[in-house]
Length: 266
Image (cartoon, rainbow, N blue to C red):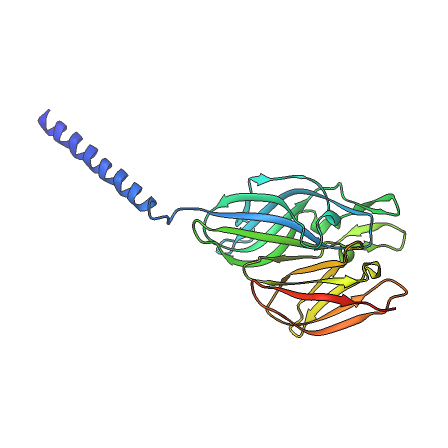
């Protein structure tokens, strides 16, 4: 009995050391998750409303296979979102979660079937191509560090995402940019007169492009999620106003470049 007693004491002592060791290892934060937040925003478009049916958001880990590497964010806010409610710097949180601190290379936005576009007060069903029904895959390269918060903006371009077919139907073929404010810059300004209501296109020599539309009341516009560089900004107003182009607008990471007031003439 003495031998058994000694063995029991030895095992208990070893397990205690193992438990203490595990606690010590966890305390250094190496197993602490990262937090990811997904926000929805949009470039303005000439529709009454663009309604999309958000169902889920997933992320993909770079070091796993295409099939096995997906993780669904637990805290999703499913529902019908009007993209035109989230323009010129306005956004909404659609999903968030604590996830393993690893490198991700894709985000997948899963939409339902209840998508519509409203034109002149009439609602039209937005059909989704079968290839997109499993989700819209968006490329992103980000290493998630323990204990840090990562915000991603899913920036729809509603005007380019809706395709009209020959028989009068509408198809949803989403054009979406993904950006973070930590790694990109922005351009803002005010168009005068606001009644010119121009569509705005920003592009640089590297092929980066982004679109916006000035607010019809205030003239304010914001083009977020731009990489560093020098941009050309084209303003395409409504008639009878004339197009205008500004060159050499410099964007830097983490900085909002203010174009001040842009005058549009007739």
